[in-house]
Image 1 (tube, rainbow, N blue to C red):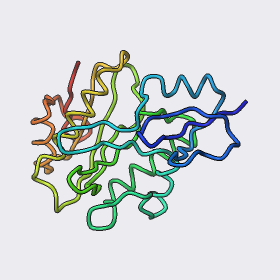
Image 2: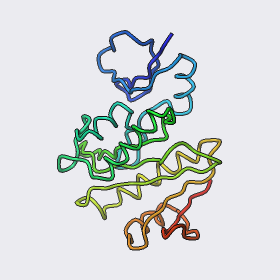
Image 3: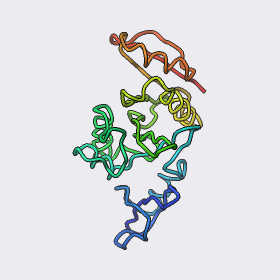
Image 4: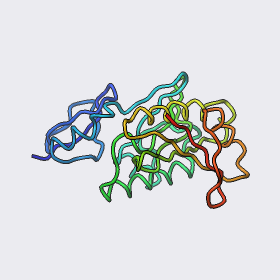
Length: 207
């Protein structure tokens, strides 16, 4: 029997049989499969939300990513009305990975929601699930809220969550040489500069 993964009102992932109406307050994610595979997918990441002092990092589901990639807001209250170009591009990457059967819960995009007003101030996430012990991370913050420590706060939480995965020992982030603010974010989050690759500055955090 086919099952689906949904998000309940507490932002927990729940596995339900497919084909039935969702209970009130539960939202479809776009993930489906047999019961065993669905439960295995969410076993290591039972919640759709990570939290920091001032932010909720809300995982973007494949269904929401499709909305964002199509130019809609996917139900998030974005600061200044719309997500940034980087967040839309990340949503497109998630959609393509999901369509190829490569996307796993936890290892995609997160919307950064400011707890004081529930506004989405940017996006952050992984370029895919870990491979050979390493996973790459990137981020996009609305220009008007930069310089307030949100990116550092979110990067610290998400990177350290990644390192709790038994198969992951390195989180990688890259930036262009002229992107000084991103370099400072990585340094404040505990990342260390490594040899450049293809003209990019490379930073890593290890567990």
